[in-house]
Length: 201
Length: 191
Image (cartoon, each protein chain N blue to C red):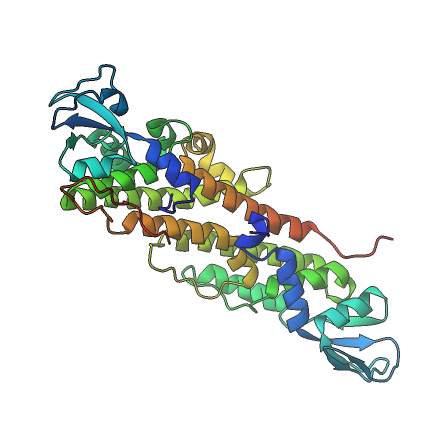
């Protein structure tokens, strides 16, 4: 195959970030006024200085990097909300607290380029890190229940799923082979050699 | 560790040899079975590579014994604590314990095969959570999680991994690394 092995197994974190940039809409507060702009992906604007407007995250990111707007962080990217979720996460050891599916990517973009728009970014950062660690510990516990047929873990974010994917699919493949019925060559009286191999999976 | 024709792992697993006893005289072809003399008689001991064994066994030309990596002694050790058994020493470096085991199970009778498969599966399940843990925390990722509970047993465990597990270890390590690098990367403009 043309792709290197590590690209075939799962999307890269950067690719997931790219998807999140396309799919997420956020509010920005422009520092300038301008009419509607029409791009292939849609029309954005008209922009008026200090009036909040909804645009895709990638537009917001681009403008922020040009110093043309400030980003308004989503409700969940705040100390209170995250503290609440962390409490939930710890108090209910058997399930994952519901977070936005692409929370890791969106939070990373915000804290990376727009840390000055997020209230107390350091605290948010450390809360996210705590959340990540608690959830990793849960994942580990969930994995112990894995069998060759299925795995149920509800509430994982896309980044977390992606991190598990290469390992998990391989591991389940191995288990499936180990649990599979033997496929033996038919016993033959003559010397016909029959392949003993599966067709693969 | 799959039965794919093109898989290197399954080729390697098929290289493992199965100790067998002949059930018929083999005149002049002893060398082919890896013996020193050319005439072999009923009851002679030969070891047959795993890719050849099923055909010969099912044609009732050979009797075979369960090979050492899957004997009772090993099973008892696995029962006691699957994580402390060094699978790599059982099948030699670069050996495929699971792949070999599955091939052996395929030629066993049904009840025995079921039992061996159960052993393989339980062993795999009991080891692979630790395996992932180790992979995520090994390689200079500063984290409190893995270090204190594992300590030195971690190194032992890693050395005891057989080929399939090593492959999985690498997979988990790589994706952990990719995520870590992503978290550390930045699009901020340099000032």
